[in-house]
Length: 267
Image 1 (cartoon, rainbow, N blue to C red):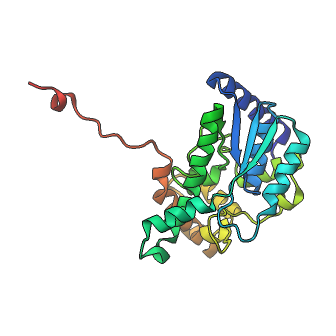
Image 2 (cartoon, one colour):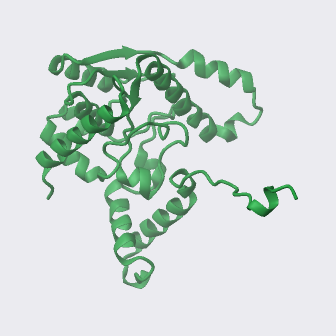
């Protein structure tokens, strides 16, 4: 078990300390109706600093009502919360038609990532004109385990308040914060696919399974024995290690080619 109350207090304190040091005027966060963005936006709102929550639907045929419900919930609780909804479908379609890629059906992942990057530049537009900090909503397994985020998309933020919390821990915090029950029970999804596939459909494993693999890997490093695992555990561990290695470029700093002084110097 975790101490949800102390975690909540610590994150709020951390946010307040950071915004004071940065001399920013407030926070901005994109909400999706998912548990991660709902918990994060609630914590940010609890700082009492101006908080702008932004809904950014793109070709949302199913009309995501959870994000609207959460926005209404926050506004009913906090006077410092302001809400904007911007439909970015025309911006996305403009890009789609501009590239006019004959292989579009094969490049669905690239197009899904474009949606995330369009949302990022929208967040930074409002952040720049208000001198706000863009708040990330990624959790520990997404950000440091399997890299399940878009580089320079939802990974393009100023601060990460919940990136040291696993999905399981976030669920406990959500319950403590009394996040809407429909959001707590909702199937996690990144909202980038028209077929509404869930996170776990894409990852081919549940968050609980991936958290197990991450914990085992961190505790035992390279010395665990695959032979002791059940078949499902072997598959999950293999999936975790594959994704971790493949997506590590999203986590590490951008590589810089350091030119030796002897090469730079003119003789």
